[in-house]
Amino acid sequence: MQGTSEYTPRTGIERWIDKRMPLPRLMYDSFVSYPIPRNLNYAYAFGGILSVMLISQILTGVVLAMHYAANSEIAFTSVEHIMRDVNYGWLLRYLHMNGSSMFFLAVYVHIFRGLYYGSYKSPREIQWLLGVVLFLLMMATAFMGYVLPWGQMSFWAATVITNLFSAIPLVGDAIRTWLWGGFSVGDPTLNRFFSLHYLLPFMIAGVVILHVWAFHVTGQTNPTGVEPKSRRDVVPFTPHATMKDAVALVAFFLVFAWFVFYMPNYLGHPDNYVEANPLVTPPHIVPEWYFLPFYAILRAIPSKLGGVIALGLSVVVLFLVPWLDTSKVLSAAYRPLYRIFFWVFVVVCIGLGYIGAMPPEGGYIIAGQLLTAYYFIHFFIILPLLGFIETPKPRPASITEAVLGRPDEPGEPATPAGATAMPERRG
Image (cartoon, rainbow, N blue to C red; front, top):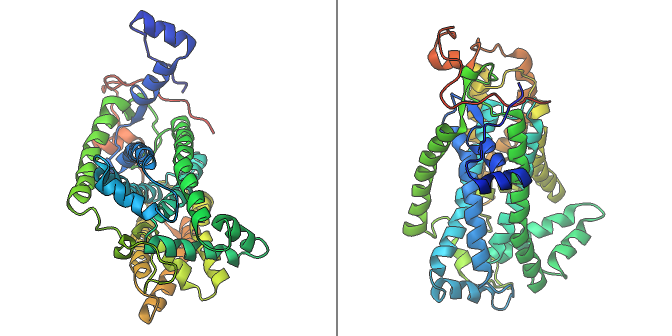
């Protein structure tokens, strides 16, 4: 069905703007009257949370950049200056530092929700691919930001990770030298990482716009995996989604505030509060917690090149998920076998995170290899096979039937209060 705009300019200035640049109409149609499935739960609130966190990270990052010095001689001191001498500098840095952890916590919930409810399936492949691109940009931005304080863990994490590029045949050494800006991690490296760390969030914001655009073209998924078939199945975005997102955002920010005000350094590594020293290697080099599962995969492969390939493939495989999953049923709520394997996969990812934080010795090596093997088995074997061997549960005929527990009745109102026509479905 073709959606029609219900926006009506109320003042002369609104009519003047709407005729020349209909931005208010676009905002109204996208975030007020836009129809969404009536059965969305709180797992769908993390998209809005991520948008708010992105704005928070950009704003705090811009202000911090005004006081930070991207010079290896004084970078560590400039961070201490922010903490001690800049008005509310401690608050800005703790918001930014813990905000990256909260950002990744929200994005992991968002990804797992998409995997559980089949948000990557036709016709939403582009929306999913853009989401994976965002994840890659986030990882690059966070890693470069981790280097900027120029503490011991920052310096040695940069040394270890950039050295991985040298394993790539033919071009690896050239890439590593370009990243370093010389023949070792130093001042040119810090300048490159600072520049990219400052610029990439704005690129992320641009891809977010594309991601939301794709979402508005194909429509929102829902816990049943059944597409809206009538106006009974949808409600307007405001107030239904906005109020639910607001409640989830308040709960999320309470957790965020707890870390910022009560244990701001809990998620950081103690060695990173010591100035970088190229002559002293920390006993155990680890990245931030949100990179630990991928770090475990990297270490699980004995050879350097093999570890780099496994690390790259662990992210690239997310691009392939829409085509690896052969089931036509979207939601795991109606896929009993997939639901079991999904939760096993979640436990495996948490296990990889734990292994990544442990020293590479003894049983941790074997456990990391087993969990890494299962990670790839889940995508390349289990997902394709389940589509052929699984018998899904009967699905409701409509979203309304799933909500009410009974088929639609002719006497029910055709349109919920305030709801608009369903959006155009393309692709």
